[in-house]
Image 1 (tube, rainbow, N blue to C red):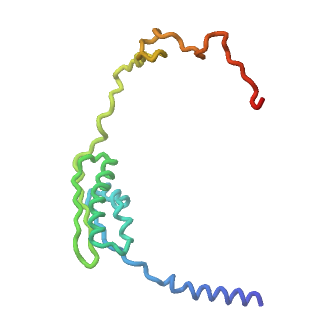
Image 2 (image 1 turned 120 degrees about the vertical axis):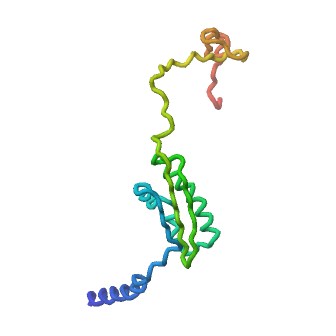
Image 3 (image 1 turned 90 degrees about the horizontal axis):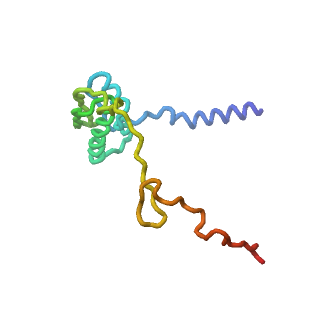
Length: 166
């Protein structure tokens, strides 16, 4: 009896979930085409932020225009990680029932990185910093100020402590 009850409940769940499983995924709101040399093309196709927004189905023209501006900066940053610091990036929109965004890249000449700091130069330790005088008259060269005393009371005049609440 219990088996029949569980079997019936399982069939009911499958019957209710069937329309969800057969639902077609919604089409992307735009197509993305990248034209760049092969290693860079793969990096851009995989990592451009535009790729995430393809799945948003209710993008209007103003939002797509904003994404185009952001995508150019994003593409430049991705290319800089590969050593291309002055690429030519053009993003255009081709109209249609579903617009196509075309990302065209001319990477230019690759550089390893901005000039590295020279390691051959000997480094000297920093010069001794003047320490401030306690008198408040500015600073004096190291060794010229008297060492700071732990207390401003003259010696032998320590304050006696009384227990609280007495």
